[in-house]
Image (cartoon, rainbow, N blue to C red; front, side, top):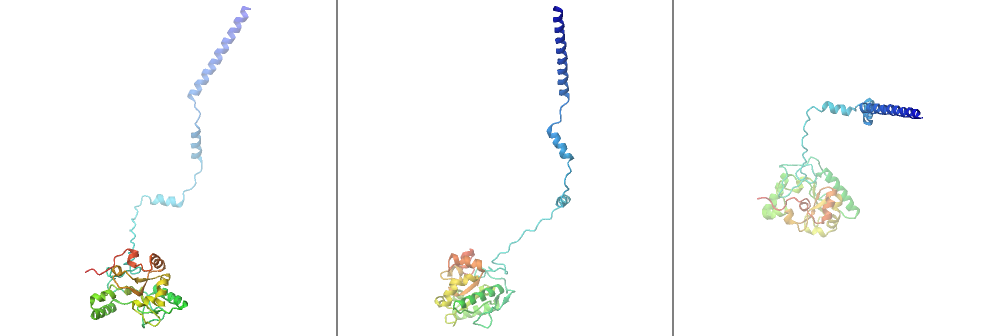
Amino acid sequence: MPTRKKRKLRLWALLTVVFGALALITLAINAFVKPAPVQEGKEKAVANAELPEKSDVTEESEETADEPQEEEEPVIVADPFTDTDSLLLLANKKHPLPDGYAPYDLREPNVASVYDSAPMRDEAAAALEEMFAAAAEDGVTLLLGSGYRSQEYQYQLYSGYCDQYGCEVADTISSRPGFSDHQTGLAADIADHDRATYLTQEMEDTPEGIWLRNHAHEYGFIMRYPKGKEEITGYAYEPWHFRYVGRDYAAAIYNVDEFCSFEEYFGVEGGDYYE
């Protein structure tokens, strides 16, 4: 019996040594040989994948990346009050027009007129024709008085008023040459059907004057020299003098007040001449 026990003990000891040795060998292998991480596998997959061809835009960008870029010239926005192509071209006692200015697109409006000729810029003439036709549909007959006036003609007109009333009074009812709203080609003096109140403040109470005050803005026209704004505009009240500025601006100005002036709405200087 003692012999068998010794044999069993020797066998267990031998197995323990063998399994211990195997465990040590396994640990040693794991210490020196590590499996590739998951990220490395992903990188290899991306590296081996077929990449899409670059677009032409990318290639052009790379080719021109080193080329010097030309500097863009700054965009100059014209002042609408001095730009002679603008519908907001301003002429008042503080803002003269370019010397000898004459619009390039003048034409005679196809409406009944007081005088033989009263040209206006094309867009203003078209709007005036539409406005006169609308007034006629409402039973109101309008007549066109003055339209465009040249600087030379304005000199003759102003000089005549100076001779008749004195230049101080003339400055309240007429423009000096080069400062006239009529020279823009966008202004129109409008008369009542029989010219009974033409160029007088009494026109405001006529059917023609009332219709114009209520509807002119619908066709792009504003009263250029409204009542009560003499110190702002530099001129006496003229219920016959209308100026084309386009429908949007005319409606906006009228919606402020039916007697809102061009100078007030746009915040531009008016009043008397610089001396």
